[in-house]
Amino acid sequence: MYMGISIKSADELAAMRQVGRVVHHTLEACKAAVRPGVTTAELDQLALETWSKWGAQGLFKNYPSYEPGKGFPGNTCISVNDEVVHGIPGERILRDGDIVSIDCGLRLGGWCGDSAITVAVGNPSPQAQKLIQVAYETLQMAIELIRPGRRWTDIAKPMQHHVESNGFSCVREFVGHGIGRRMHEEPKVPNFCSRELERFGDFYLRSGMTLAVEPMVIAGQHDVVVLDDGWTVLSKDSTPAAHVEHTVAVTANGCSVLTDGT
Image (cartoon, rainbow, N blue to C red):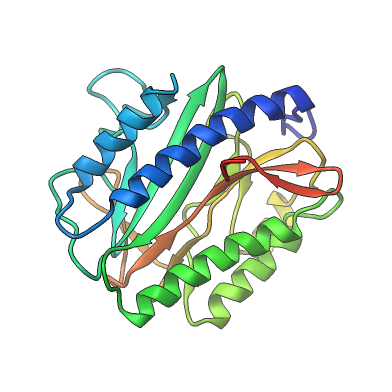
């Protein structure tokens, strides 16, 4: 344990990679099924059927209480167009030009994995294509910069710069997180830097830390609103958003992605 952040052993990281593989396979199945005419409920059901074959359990259904009928109603979070995160799967039909973010969190063998993808439906606009590309570039940048001894702000600053230099915005109200035995552990893992973060929320990376790094990028301004359902987060200016995520481990020499299917 370091500053309240759990440090995992090699065996524990191997167990987290196992659940990470199931998360990856689930998202790949959903990605292959994305096309005009499919509903978000159908994608949600496909995800459940996929991970159930591996004996995994979903982390989102009924969160945060895990009591039936309470908390989040979906197996996955599926957010379309201006929905940033925490979209509830339902009868919404995907249409040509939409962009859809699918977020999947699972537990297997007592360990958690969390990852998200953003996929274009049919033929998206050039702006939507660029938005998705920049989100993935930002995630990859973080992965390449992570190494022991660096502060998280050394990672967050370039992430924010890359997003904003491309004309987009980083969401401020929601951030990544530590992950391990529980889906949400310390520390908070933002995709932007602020004076408050530098003073009170910064931390040094150490080998064995496991983090869910998840850029949330909006085409317009960074402000968001939450619908009356209490979950769905939308961009305030109704511009599209992209959300991508990997569970990663800090290693002696850098970073290892635990949800890339390897």
